[in-house]
Length: 126
Image (cartoon, rainbow, N blue to C red; front, side, top):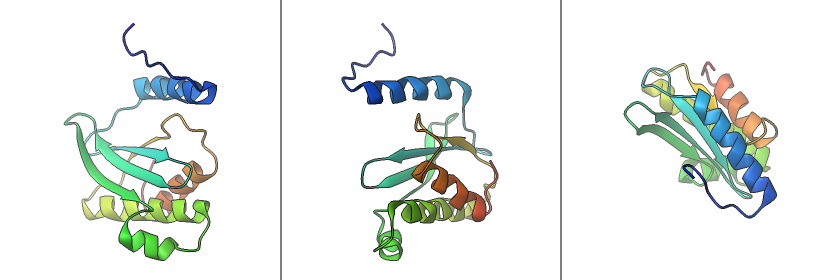
């Protein structure tokens, strides 16, 4: 079966199913890249992706040196907002203002929502 992945955990399987459904509808271009969010238990990562040329235009995570220094001692949601502001600043430096937000199968809540709000505060349009 094409596109089938054997995933044991019911929650991971549900996320994978949601992700597949979302990705059918979303695509990023150079003018309007897809802003993809990945969150682990400890950290958050964001990529701006041009799906036409299959290139990553910009990335940000709370593990980067300058963000890790600014985020030390803060809660995960506050760190996620800083990551959103960082990716927005990097995209604006490349003259990209509009993006398509890809929540990557996660519920739009908590850290995923904070990334989106931080990016909006810094000037990105969804």
